[in-house]
Image (cartoon, rainbow, N blue to C red; front, side, top):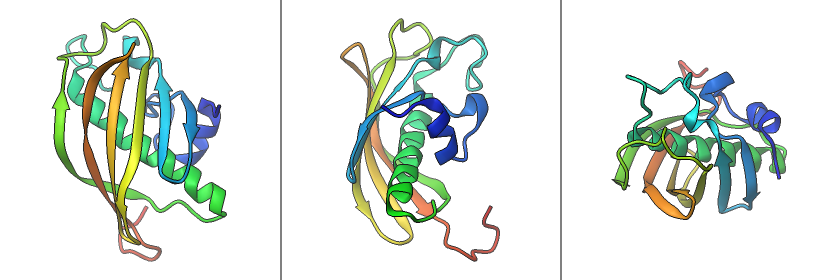
Length: 149
């Protein structure tokens, strides 16, 4: 298992904005992660004392970032920063997630990729119940891109 400290070293999301706590398993095509922070009253995405299910899309996008970081580290390459450009076929099966007692778990898998983009499917569960699913597309910044950070 890969812990939070290692995850923080792989992604641009730092502090409380890094949403995943553990990588349960991963390979070149998929990743499984776990998070416990959805009940935290200081969660950075909370508003009006609630964490809405729409924020599971950010959890899905960050699963992609963690997977990309692990793949880059394994190949000895550098992580290419990405920009989320599209969400497709998102289905939310609950209204909020701050009232869920157990950990959130996500599985994300690569659907398509090129030198400049990636598309993943993600599914997020709580205690075996499907909370959200969808697809996310990211445009990758190339070395030397104007405005790359």
